[in-house]
Length: 195
Image 1 (cartoon, one colour):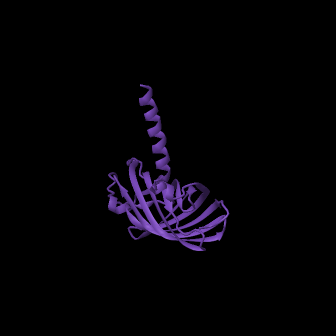
Image 2 (cartoon, helix red, strand yellow):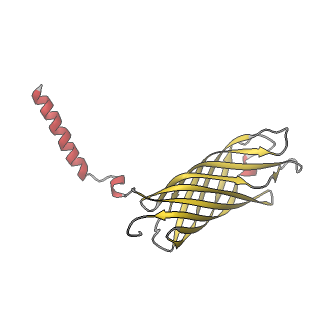
Image 3 (cartoon, one colour):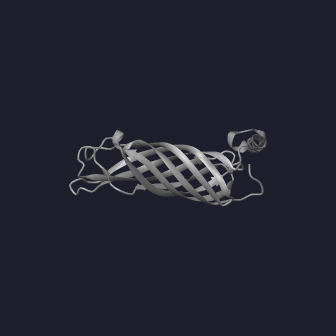
């Protein structure tokens, strides 16, 4: 029994020493916490030939100077007309997990890719209609400018995919549309060097 215990401990120590030399995806990519950011976003889209404005924001933690993980929210400012009845309208709001990637943040202008995934709801101004819970996936791609180390300005374009729409004569295709977005990102990325 004593020999088996010594052999087991020796195997564990040897495998630990070998594992430290083994290369993996995550020990090659430094994913240390390197900053935090808060964004004020202004989003524009066309719904049935009517321009709609969404306001919102997000906060995110920065990992490895390029990966952003956080929480985002947006809501439509005015009611958009229903396609079946111009007297009634609806508002869309959504919130969810934000995942962003900004390679080359050390350069003044660099790309920015993001996606918001989560729930939302459609509110109607007609009291006979109820709220509708929906699912929203919102990928975007754009450019970001380092104005100061604590301020970034971003311009993005993307597509808002809204599913599970089933109230008020609305369909997913009525609400799922391309969008353009401007963001003011406030925060800080610490460390001695930019990559």
